Amino acid sequence: MSNEEKILAILEALTVKVDGIDSRLAKVEDIQAAQGEQLTALADRVENMDERLTAVADRLTIVDEQLGRVAVTQEEDILPYIKLLDEGHQEIMHKLANKGRVEVLEKDVRLLKNTAKNHAQRLSELEKAN
Image (cartoon, rainbow, N blue to C red):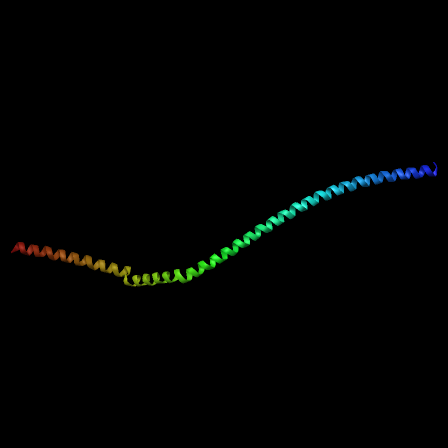
């Protein structure tokens, strides 16, 4: 084998290797292109989520404002009425007789009724006797 043949064989081997490298480089470029598309899709999703989070933050601000107004209304308008109702309820509870006292009074009323009934019967018998 002559030097020229050796050089040609080496060039052919290099050409095969370069072709292999070119095909591998094309695959890498395809993969990179697909990854670029995926990154673009992810960037779009992140942008969409950012917009949605901004909308949620805006709603939360509105809810916080409304909650503040409700708290002020409750404190200024509702709580005084509740306090008045409580005071009225306390007065009513003090005026109402307790259970023990009512039971004693019921017992006394029964005794008085029985006594009145007995007296009425005795008077009736005395009138009949006369």
